[in-house]
Image 1 (cartoon, each protein chain N blue to C red):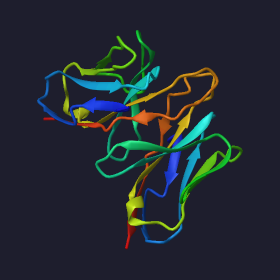
Image 2: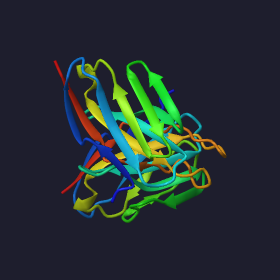
Image 3: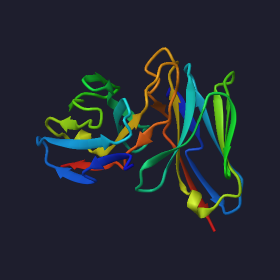
Length: 115
Length: 112
């Protein structure tokens, strides 16, 4: 299994540009999520999904869109990039079963710089 | 005040030393996670625990639910243990238990 994969690893955007960060997992996990990691702050949840066709907002959703058309893929779209979105982005996945907690599996991250 | 607090923020140790990293939380949880992040690297799960103690190699994680406190211990530390260690909590099982809340991490450097 490849686990959780993310592309690209690095990206530089100009203010106002749009782009999509890709995330895929091959473990048939229902739960997928996007986090951003900024210096001095804990990882913060942007959006998450509990299954294909179901998404919801996390703590910091503004400026980002997601969709979940398949179990495997969970892309994150930046609609109009701003310097405040300069960050490292992590995608994660886990199984989802009632009454049980599972560990989360993280992708390698995407380092995004917006100039 | 953050819901998950870690201490210390930074830690330098010599090879072989016993290391303790602390995590306190102020919310109800169903589980606590310890994660490791190497410089420039991804994040891996070390432990997930909801009570008592777990051990994996030289790493030991404990949790005291009544005191809302967890510790991560590294015995006989080695330079390859140098990383950021992150504490995270899962909300009560009635919610979306996969939605983690993270501490800001403890940066550990182990020198020869």
